[in-house]
Length: 294
Picture (cartoon, rainbow, N blue to C red):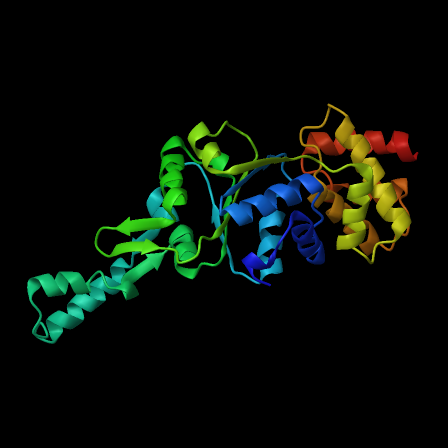
């Protein structure tokens, strides 16, 4: 399947479902619009709600390479765009010198040092070179203002200028998915460039469907019991990190691995590390499990 073969939001939803990713109507619609309008898709939401997984599902469904840029504090353009292989350049220079200069002028020698074979493509440049591709810019909220400005420029033209090399532009615009856990607000200029969607935790029925789709080996009763407990935990305000869908899947998988066909207190408590990742949450959820399952 190619990018242009999706003719509607419903078709995109079906394609994503074939990979195991169940998108609701709103997400399927904004995803379809981002594809048809060749606009980046900015996804915000709590950790574990499926933002990164959507990019993975798009790559799988379209049969495209997934190129991921993981953002972090202090990331700059060179780490996202390109760098030069300094060691290889030095070896090349020594080789030319050993051969007596190979009849090259100083200008020709300098030019040869910036040949394509010495160019180290980082994720953004790689996506432009390999497009069509899916470019996942993960956790953009961890980067700083300067990086956002650089990213806005690239996403406006899908091309970059490398002083020693020239301009690299994508023949086909990559599918770009940006994710944010909203640890800080992004600038309006970047948001205006993108289509936006907030991904919330799914409701009971949809989350059960997700578990049954992704983990068909898990008994239906166990899947429903796990999701009901997770939904109740999310509804409380006393956990540091409400479990996401990823944790729901991990917990259901862990219980199935223990050979359980339904949820019981002993197994739930023993496998709580698949659901909670903070000591305080482990203690609070264990107490809640005693009330719910005891």
